[in-house]
Image (tube, rainbow, N blue to C red; front, side, top):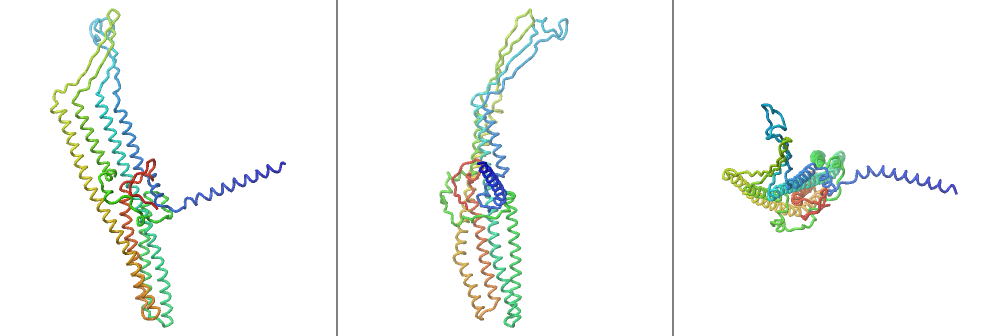
Length: 443
């Protein structure tokens, strides 16, 4: 009976040790998992200082909005009135009938409309900060996507060149062997060697591009940029969730952060103009004081009201209103200009993206197959003795160039996709935000 608990304890200890070992091993494995575009953008958003700064600015403005809507703090007033400083009663608090010890309370009473407008002004500041946060998120998502795509295509180009380099090395070995056996010309050996050197140089350039892309990706996500990439770009196969006409509608464009920020500036200027108009009505200040005199005299109470006199309204309040109305006109003009420029920019991006997709399809469906057929024909002619190795190398070089051009064109089009796809940021992959409607597509 006593052996059973011991066996259970041994089994439990072994299980715990195995679990600990598994966790120890799984940690590095988890860290080495491939990096998808979506995860990269999540890491970048969580790491962004701009998002934290704009969140703090939003909180600060909303806290100030609550404070601005309240009455000012009352003022406690203490003093001594009519204290003698000469004669027999000098510095006496109780012998002269005019000497009084005073305690009072003063309260400024700004109009409720003004307090509400001041609070509304800070709410407009919060909206501006939130729009700037969305712009920062747009920059983070676009920058991360472009860096991820550049690294992806650099690796694809490298794999293509590496494959061709291995093939060229075999061709050089074959040409060298044929020359030694008297079946080939030495020029073919030199041609194969020159082709190999050219490919090695291009491979070095691609490695530089890949390192630069990794450095730029590290700018957004830090040490995770060293992980391998997972998934494929989806811009070629994604189905647009909105047509160009729908994307360019006024309602859709107004949701974009740049135009939302411009609209928030207009609303803030309008709020300041309404506040300037409200300031033409003076605020009152009320005051009450209790005054204590000497024992032989009666105590007193004082009550007073202070009202600012706007005796030069034409040069003060009216000028302030005119300035604020001019600021409104400025904000509206800038908003209209921003909207026109932004719409033109989006139309240009859409045009370039559509053209890029058409060119990629042409290269993929027509130019690459033709280059491959030409290369195959040159290789066949060489094998049956009707062609030389130089022609084979030239045909293969042309095919590789066509494939590299296709990948470069895909990268250029993918950059356009990233700019378009994240004009309005994807809040579903932002920290602490809800999903937003836009033309999103992720691996």
